[in-house]
Image (cartoon, rainbow, N blue to C red; front, top):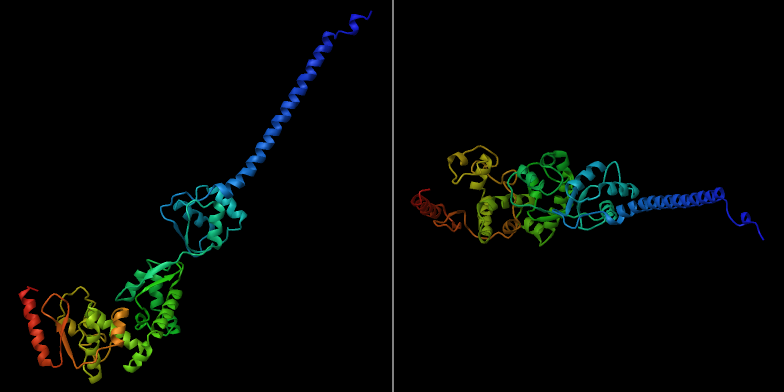
Length: 368
């Protein structure tokens, strides 16, 4: 019969066994915890790039989907612009990915870009880095003065009014494109033009020169100017006067014919708009002796021939009205005694006086 001590574990050995089991459990717990921690860290560092690339980006709604990045802007300025526009939700993720995609530059790519709501950071950065710019529509109206044109254009492109006006007065720059400060406005054809927002003043002038050439290349306009014995600039200067004489397009060719008749016989143009331009009294309702006797080369009451430059931009219908001027014998015209804004034409001064007296009487009855 076996001794009982051979089959039973002594208390000390039992305790030792329990300690060993606890140590094993502790090690397993420690290993499991460490494993979870490592996995969590690995997940975190793996998730952060994924989040930055694919799950962060442009909000689903934007107050303004366009962003303008100025010429010479650095990365910090771009981030500030994007944040201000509400385009970037996760700034940290955007910054990280911008570094990974080599978007950070000393001078960032400039331009105006359309941003699509819901883009992730990768799509946003890719578009800002290499995507097409969103053009602007520059609308040129019938402005009178270079400073007015500069102010108007500056509303559409990056160049400010000061840099534009400086370019408009730069004789060297203008000579390169065939103009002077006095004749520059003849290079502006009122229209709507698409161009990039980050267009500078010199580039704007080059574009206007290109559009000017395209205008004169169409519809036989150069040949028509030659048939009138006029240069393109002279046609534009005359058209600028017609532009300020009437808004009624059907009469423009007739008025142009009157002025051409006067030029052909050496008669002073005596155009009211030129005397107003000379005095810069653009708010006047009536032309008075003050205007007609103001000494200026632009005042055609004082000097024969065309003024040295245009007194306004001239619209395309007005330019074409001069090029297709009506052939007649009228030398005079004045406003009709009504509110139509149309004119009465006359071949002789005597007939013109009758028309003028009718209009003046009508004005007096109106208390003007």
